[in-house]
Every structure is written in structure tokens, then in C-alpha cells.
Length: 258
Image (cartoon, rainbow, N blue to C red; front, side):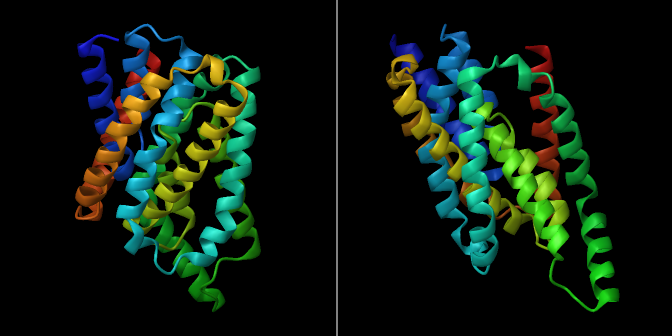
């Protein structure tokens, strides 16, 4: 690699780590960067997944206070993310990337609509629970949340781009939590997905990886995740919601426009 490539990929890693911690669409920076420098799409996807794990860890650690009190929910959802990531990783190794790319814009539009209307949905769910005299989620709602988490794990293990936005949009509409606490949960679940996918790629497709590119993204994302968590935790909910929508629109444009 040239010096320019090393610097560009490292900086892309910093940007991706920061954006993933705040919102979750950092792959839309690192993946096109690797493609630009000539990496095959599958190699870029797998190398990127490995490189973003350190950033997911630093972002999750930065949001550890917002995770407090969510232990039961974490124990319910982490296994779903893990199984989903394994499924998605298997699909990546056996199916063409176009299979998921075709539906990504539709999923993103749905997620952004949910992010915008999330306060109203949460209010409606809360009022319904109050009428029933029960504030805890019903068994059906818990099942739906676990199912959504599994499907998003499949998506993340396969394509990864903007999985954070999808998780925030869907979980934020189903859970009676603030946007920042949902974002903290999103960071943990994407860490699980990225770590599982990275391990799967390293074990069964190590010869198709670019370890140099993965290492550069890893170093950058570790720094970026710390920066993103520090900034993201201070953002008021309306500002964070606006950033999610803006980056989601950019993500749709990047994917559709190629």
C-alpha cells in the first residue's frame, strides 16, 4: 500500500468508528474506501467487519452508563444477535451481495420513518400498558423484539452497512427507553454481530481477507469509537434523531447510487 492509501483507510476507520458510536452507518465510509482502492467487494466486506470490531468495543464502553439497568434485556437480545450474525455470515459466504443490497434502501426508509415517529409510538405503547395496568412488555412484544434483533443480526452479519440505524429505528419503537439508552443497546448488539462475523470470516475465509486493510481500519475505529461515544452521549434526543435521519438519507443515496 502507498502512504496515501494507508492514511486514507486509517482516517476512514476513525470516521466509521465515530459514526457507528453515535448513529451506526460507518460501513458506508470504510466499505466504499476499500472498493475505491481496488479491493473486491467480498474482501472489502469481510476486512471491514474485522476492522470495525475495536470501534464497536470502544463505542460500547463509552456508552456503559446508558446500559446500566438493561441487564435482563441484554441477556435476552445478545443471543439473538449472535445467532443472527452466524446466519448472516454464512449467507455472505454462499450468496451474492446483490441479494441483500436490493432491499437495503427499503429497510433504511422504514428505519428512518420509525426514528422520526418513535416518540409517538412509544407514547402509544406506554398508554396502552397503563390502561392494562402493566408497564412491562407482553410476551408477544418480547418475542417481536427478539425476532427483530435476530433479523438485524442476519443483516449485519451479511452486509453490515447501516445496521445501527435499523436497530435504533426498530428497537426504539418497541422499547420504552430514551433514544440514548436505545443507542447504547444498539452499540452492544452491533459489537456482538461484528465480533461474531469477524471471527467467522477469520476462521473460514482468512485467505480472502486483507489483514493490512483490516488492521488500519481497526486502529482508526478504536479511536473513532471513543470520540463518537464522548460526543454522542451529550447530544439532545432531537439532535441525535436529526443526525440519524440525515446519515440514513446519505446512506440510501450511497447505496442506490453505487
